[in-house]
Length: 199
Image 1 (cartoon, rainbow, N blue to C red):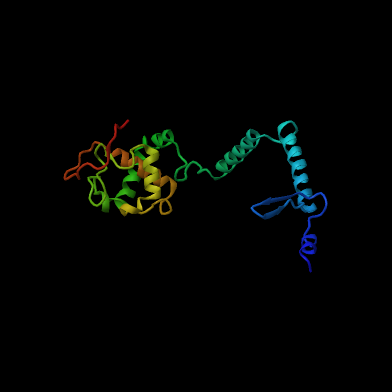
Image 2: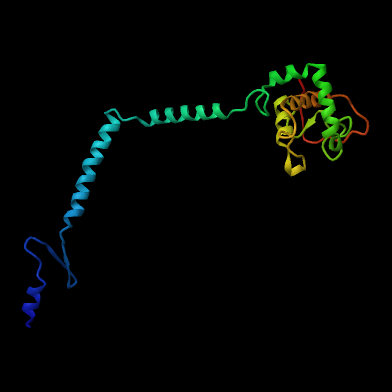
């Protein structure tokens, strides 16, 4: 076969451009029809998508965000602790509970049975911190105390009591622990945590 016949055998179809660089031929191949239809279809779809969400009835990002936040609030409300459950009481409701001598006495009974082994019979501290001074590791607000008692501090060896005491017993424990403040028990353990101004 002659050289001319070989060149004719690989000659590009009519209308196709051929570029030659340093003796290397580069053919301008036609794109497959399926690929072109995909491209054209994507362009048409994107134009419709843009018009629907920019000028049409499609929800904007702000609309979708508002719907998502509303759903989140619904879920939060459904799973929020109820009053009487650990974490379900407010600072004011716990203060009101703590104002009762009866509740504080019940809290003292629970404290002696469950807490005194680590915090001392009078809150002076031992394995656990002093509960009668102005220094607190996890905060001294009523809700903070309720959370610590309910959830425990496992890395410090304090177990979670939330599942082992009733909601009323938990609130009474909080009332009694707060009542220990300023009692200055003998042999008190040194300060731990940050100084807190008690209300």
